View 1 (cartoon, one colour):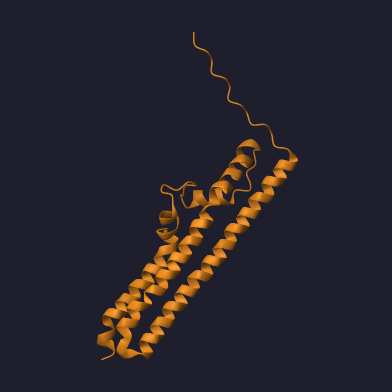
View 2 (tube, one colour):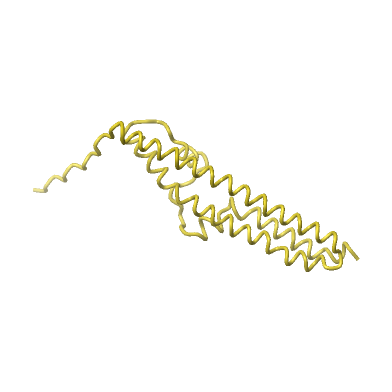
Length: 167
């Protein structure tokens, strides 16, 4: 005769105090994530401005345009690395936000707040990424690298065609 498995322990209901703490933590984390987004936009804007400055210098210094474009590729590369670090740090908050939403949904029966859960469902994302670490969460994150790859590609294209444009 087999022994029945012990019933899984049911989580005890949260007190009003605990609910208040979870609510405060949740919105603090959401604000922190948004603050990271604001900083990421500043970094992206500075990278684009730096690339624009390189293009302006190329036009001004026509004889050295190829060298300027090649050296100028370091600017978007620098901002790519900087933004990827910010994105990696930002993604560190996601699991806790998902955990709080799960607690509020499963233990308390709430339907809200679910900012992160709705976002992941809408964009078909997983709260836990398939690959973890700085390289995947930051450097090769598609929301990070696309603009910098385009900037570097454009500068390389300009380096290649600069001698024919300014003969």
